[in-house]
Length: 299
Image (cartoon, helix red, strand yellow):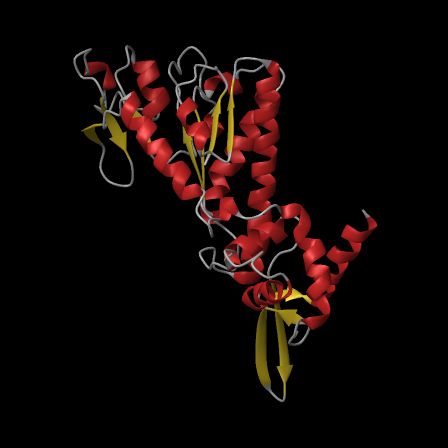
């Protein structure tokens, strides 16, 4: 989970205990940090699509695509930012358009979207919308979509007494629903549980430091049994476990894929026809692993 609050209200501060990235503040330094994360997010999305092109299934543990949920509270502050507004809009719109296919989902929240309108390329790419009480038809349509007020979807009819009640639009028919009320104590408990789960061995976000894996790989590279120049993620992990006792025992193939991806290594698909038969090998190529070891040694 990546959580950003460009207004700095701190409503999601509890998520800092388990979020992969958390930024909150109404200042240029925070905005710069959020933009850097969004650039990183798009690069990760592009990496995932390159892997999907070769592998084909995002949910396979060897592909290294754990789900990413990005929460941007008071998102209108990013869109209206004098220096970064245009880039933030372009980055978020791109991830909204393509991210779901790469297991990247986004939650955008805006407290007053009529004061700082949500850009069209953002609104048009949000399939699920939820609107609490608003005071005018323009704000209503900013959230629920053009023509919503005219068609009878009116969050303006809600009152102060309708706490947590709003209009939901998703794949089904629009309906009025009540959200769960989560008080501070409950949020603290949920955050503690999430942090504990994140710290368990085998979690992708709990993978050991990425900086040493290429050096470890260099020590076991000659012992790996490549088939047609390719080794599967699981076989590569087994080689690391054999060469480094206990160091990789808690790792999964997904942890390995995530760590290697940070060094530009991804699953490759090698197809060869031998005696009229097509053979397919999926994994890491000897050439790519050797090149990564060489780059690490040069650094």
